Length: 385
Image 1 (cartoon, helix red, strand yellow):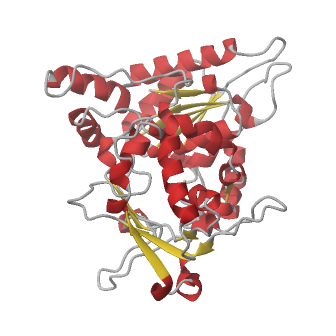
Image 2 (cartoon, helix red, strand yellow):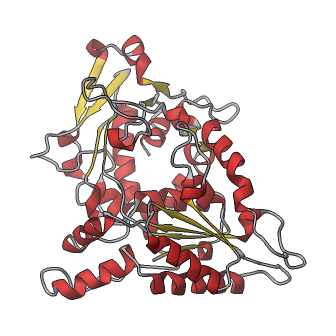
């Protein structure tokens, strides 16, 4: 979204490397070497947000890495805009489009060549991004969806070559077993239902969702998608009932998962066009679970008629190809999303990114939803627990 803001303001966006928590990296961190590992952004995505080209004959300036920032915009030439001086005027604005336009007008009319947006102090604004948690977590972005989906930033977003090579290498795992009905697709992704199941320590995160009376996150809140979260009475009124409701959706049981998978497949079949053959025989499970629980779920799915089941654990990946499940879920015929986003701290020159992620549902699922809708997949193929 920051890339799109820069684009509409006729400015160059400055992107940075992606920074995970140290323990998420696949190699051992040496305690006597206090450096922060980084992942080059182009290792994860390609497209204008990571310095890729715009459409042919589009005069927009391309994004550049922060490695070149001081060369093109030394600190002495930058105008500093603090979010504390901008956001109060739009803090309670319910329209994402109006919030975006407010920022765009400010940047477009500013005469300075270089602008750096800095965050307010945490005691002034807990979420000091240009497009903050309240923007993404309370449906403000919904009236902006079609414009953003159709924008060059979104249209030209691509999977990186590293990620794509990992997908290609593991595609053989996704090919279902057994006879394919006449007329059904031979593409393994056309016969796949992908499901995002977070387990383990995420139960504690689900408890925090209940305490904060949270709702779905970002594009998961789009009104035309089939599943919507209905709030319980609230933590302060009935903690037991509220926690039960949240755990049902956030940390679903085996029975709930099976019921959702059955219903999602049936609804997808019913939405077929006249003469179209839809056939799902493969389940791909995106999960961090490595316990006996996932083994029981796999067996239950087999007993329920699914003849081919693949999990994240089966993927063959090297240290550069970690966490490519999103790419498979994007391509699947049906996707069921769930989960709580992982805590993340990033610093961008455009604005400080500080995400308190226990307050909202999954940004991981939301990113998959964006890619699927950008691919023009039917809303009925996008479900939530």
